[in-house]
Image 1: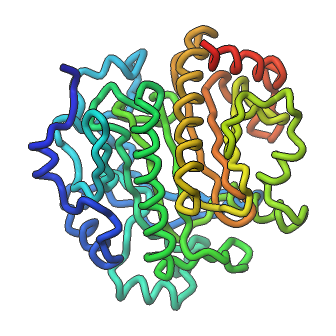
Image 2: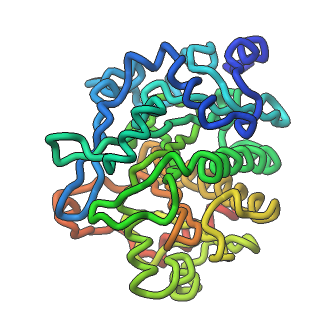
Length: 380
């Protein structure tokens, strides 16, 4: 039998079966009472690069993560022999749902990029405009969660039944809904230039796979952060909508060439963007561009998004070894004002070079050939 978190250990770690049952203050207490996190708290400040508005959070303790690659990293994530998650060496669980085999669950990130403040301190920070005294930085605060795709170590999006993938996506949507609708009033989000973000709190959803792109554990997972920091991509989407009078998703659905469509899923589409930055970058667009968040989607749309995740990640697992690359990729979620709702699948098919740091990207494949190859892989 493969490694997995068993039901007995789950019972010990379980603090709530449904995150929707937790109030904001209960969630804050669960974070603050988690003793294992106390040694790895972030510094709680954010600096802004004045050239482009990039946000830089600081947490020096993340450099001490025991599973981070060192000078001699393992060649593949699959060589990890003992999984801390499967052994239950993790934080309390706040959401769980059964799958056809095992279960999916959400807990607190042991090495958070943001951390909740006590209520009295939080109120003071809001009143002070989140400014850290004597610095060019603002205070940063919020929550950092992990969603484990499956309790079974070797199961992830690419090899799970589609029905299970839909369950995982639905639980992610429930967490997102609670964060935005129930906790958002506690997370005002000022932007670098002083204008107020018209959504209280930003929900950031990503997936890392492979040590080369930031995944310190091989057990399949997604990361969810919620706080008072709005990253540049979200502000780019807001600016795009302000200048073009339409969301970025609406624009790309209209303008991206049809030959770059990898697969149409009815209510969603997987495509290679005409501005592909690295070989085999792909984007998932939800066709109803009036919707900005996962929790706004219908069950049919959720199922379509989950199926795209399944197919795109499966294709990445197939194509990277064929081109001589280790399997490593990121998935990012763009939600909120200006975005519509879209996801980017970013395989590490090409390393970043010096010109890229100046903003000049040199891509080693053309989008048309990449789209053809991805269609072929999905057909296998």
